[in-house]
Amino acid sequence: QLQLVESGGGLVQPGGSLRLSCAASGFTLDDYAIGWFRQAPGKEREGISCIGRSSATTTYADSVEGRFTISRDNAKNTVDLQVSSLKPEDTAVYYCAAVYNIRLCALRKHEYADWGQGTQVTVSS
Image (cartoon, rainbow, N blue to C red; front, side, top):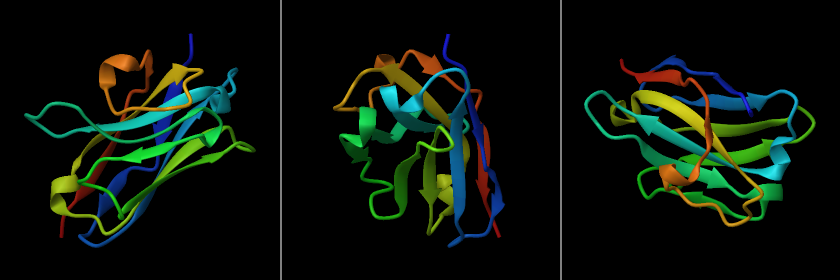
């Protein structure tokens, strides 16, 4: 079973940036579509960005378009999410998830088979 580990979360001031990373061992992440999701307290988990197998496609939710950038680092076997111009409403636990051999990714959480444990992002002054 694919095990995913997120890292890079933390406390940041409004307008700041973080780089979140999703890593796996024993599997080549480039063979998977990877989605980034987030869940704020009392809210449903929402999809914010995804990247298809071999970076065939990328998708962003309207709420993060232009502020967040998803990319692969195949040398490190990671999928990273650069989060910039952060707002307090971006505060959430951020999760990465994977589905095998999908080039056209989507932000529908039920389509993803494997999930990480999440990393907390808190945006506050």
